[in-house]
Length: 237
Image (tube, rainbow, N blue to C red; front, side, top):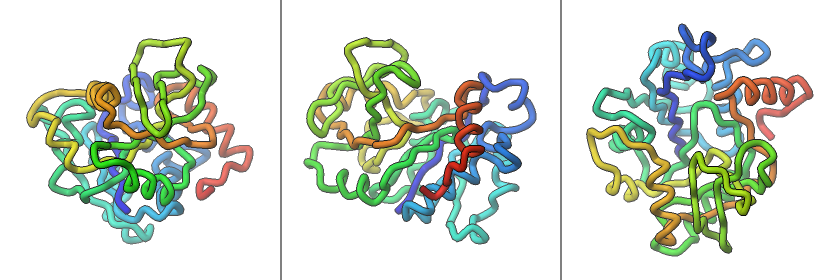
């Protein structure tokens, strides 16, 4: 299985820590965050990694190389001014992508049964172009932004808290490469708008993530993940 990690952002919320270090390399108990993330993916059966990098991406490549020493195969897609935003970065990586692949963010740590999620997506109806990992959040860790109906996301609203929503995007999805045909080339676009559109048209699946996820894109999130690791969090669990 293959996973794409979007790790090209500026990490502005984490400055000054990210002024000379990309967010995915922020140290957690002496190890860069991405080490924990890659171990989790590998434990789930993911061996092929595409890293979408931009800001200070050379430091990421220097740290990880081609992944051979980690039992992985790592390739790099370098963001450009024409491939801005999360949607643009993913579109730019299209030539490197398998027919079906995982997508996650460079600051996300999501404990899920990767094989089961991949299989559930494959078993979904033909019109489903992506399956989003969702967690029953009840607004506990961040504002819930997903409404589900059965095994589909029926509404996805980024950045607009809704007290009627119980679930949140957990930070991992399974994508069909064909979905990228809808993302325009050489434009600065966010994936949020496509998630919203696919949900509205019945083309976005939902897969329940049973355990809380972690993110290191905010100071509070970083602190939570540090506590998780300090308390014996198993990066392969």
